[in-house]
Amino acid sequence: MNAEPLALYVHWPFCVSKCPYCDFNSHVRSAIDQDIWREALLADLAHEARLLPGRRLSSIFFGGGTPSLMEPPTVGAIIEAATTHWQSADKVEITLEANPNSVEAARFADLAQAGVNRVSLGLQSFDDSALAFLGRAHSAREGFAALATAQKHFRRVNFDLIYALPGDTEDSWAATLGQALSLGTSHLSLYQLTIEPGTRFAAMVARREFEPLEPDAAASLYELTDAMTSAGGMPAYEISNHARSGQESRHNLTYWRYGDYAGIGPGAHGRRLGRRTVRHKKPENFLSALARNGHGIAEEAPLSSAEAADEALVMGLRLSEGIDPHAIADRFGLPGIVSPDRIERLVASGHLKRSGSRIALTARGRLLLDYILGQIALVEESRALAVG
Ligand code: SF4
Image (cartoon, protein in one colour):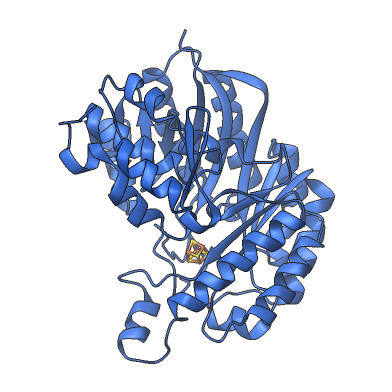
């Protein structure tokens, strides 16, 4: 039996409307047949389970889209099937992303009953004008009410906020963050607004309808975030994710520590026994592929040692625990994955720190993740011609 824990990601691709900053695989449909989707997801899951026998399931994550639009029995059926296909860890972490409106919050009790034990709420802001700018369908008041309902039904609650919006200042963000830290959750996901290609915001910026916050101002807000969350007992354990000790997302840690995860549902990515899998993105194409092939996979390919090591480096450096470069090199049979000289230089300049055999980004280094990766990664530089 492969003792490595396994994570399961389930993608629900539907939303009531499309947010202007969103580049996730989300689709708006006038009607969704829950029976068809339940059966489709169960069949897609069974395909992965056949290829991953004897694994121990450590987490399930329902992401989207808006998975809180799933009927609780659909969620329950998937949880039951997953915990039947695979042995369960002591307590499987089962997270569901939810939008904070009253209709979805009314389902929380049933979702908890179905087995969900952690909820991640897309609050995004406490300010109605910022919520309107972000195209969110809920008000700040609805957000607080949904949070209170979530905290009643789930022991572990996370919420997301988006900051570094045009006009955000250190004072305004400090006030928001102070409020966020006082709300009693054990986990916070704090994302800076980024303008992704192909989104409505990208078109608006191109038309000069608004200007994103200056990078220096956004960097100051990141530093403020780091200081305030650390002082508040919820330090960053990943670039954008903060938790009280022991309350980190087990599921996301599996991604960042480069463990296996089965990804099912439209557009889901997965990593299974050294192979990368990608499902069809468009819901209708996913259903046709499933009817044809018994699974929704659009692409599946083995990862070379160089690709896998590169990905493990990129993911691992996001974590405050960092990486052990020798362990990654050994794992993928490579002589080395990082340049020792460049590591030394970045330690000396205060962008990286060492702890035994591990290296990690400092708070200053986290602002320059892409640059630092470009500096130190031997594997990416030479694609497989790793130098010791
Ligand atoms: S609710 Fe989430 S997934 Fe849906 S459009 Fe908005 S940001 Fe994208």
